[in-house]
Image 1 (tube, helix red, strand yellow):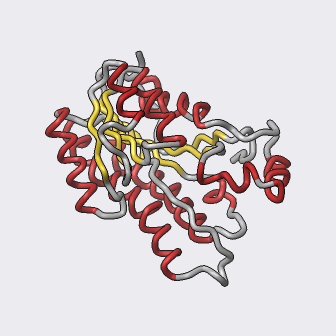
Image 2 (cartoon, one colour):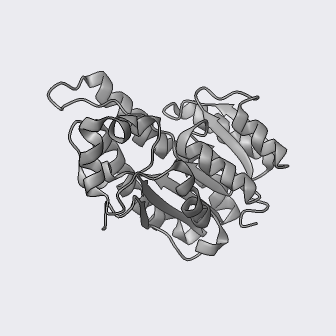
Length: 248
């Protein structure tokens, strides 16, 4: 198993890509810290990982609140003694055209999607630096790479995550900590409108050479690869898992 003996923190773990990745990580041998604002001890994903024989820590955390993130990492270290992987996945979307967007909706998207990603990355960096190893996988999106109509807040946040990844990779490489990012296109709660609404679905499918939206389960193998020692010489990189929609 590729992640045997590793401890992985997965934010936004309760559903969608986070759930699929966490379950694959457990299958590959990782013990898990499952992070979400609404997750509970008896959540099905926690139960499924425990049934695989994995140790699981469940934490209700708002990643946009630094104190909660710091406490989560502290509890992880007390519980497991180390942290090897961070899958920085938590995110939300509040679409609106820029001339209609409220200050509240701008600030909330930046707070969760960008500042939250930074808080989590910063919190795990210290223990990873001490143990001189670790892998951090952030999530950007095609919106953050290309821009998209009706999501200037989300686009700005995800573009920031992409830039954050490259700077963090350069700073942390000397400690044998790798920082990479993925840009997925998969059917999740966040993409329901473009994946199901005929007004948007055809337009988006025209942009995807493979002609379909991905599934959360198709994102997991790339994340596991980046989390594992198989990618030991890869850092600061972007992997687009989107059927060919973005070709950097």
